[in-house]
Length: 99
Image (cartoon, rainbow, N blue to C red):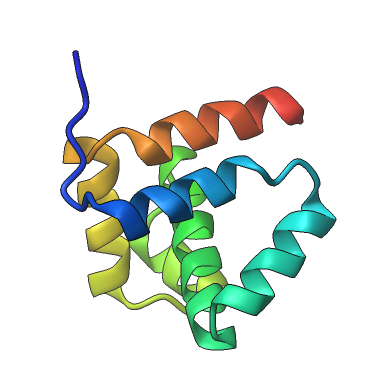
């Protein structure tokens, strides 16, 4: 099934290409710290941790206690896991391969 992104354009494509150039954790840290605010980086990291915990079948209460995420954020991530573009699913499977 072909994926059609909701956001498309030259700027978005440039960002996606830039992300694909990163090959180490150090490179990723450097780029993300330059391109995102601390709050944006923390929010994205929190959502990824929420996705990991949801994937491991943790409860909303457990996730909220560990991550500090609101139930609205947990619900949004859960919805993306089940009905989104499969981005979380792909990344989580790739991360599982690294462990």
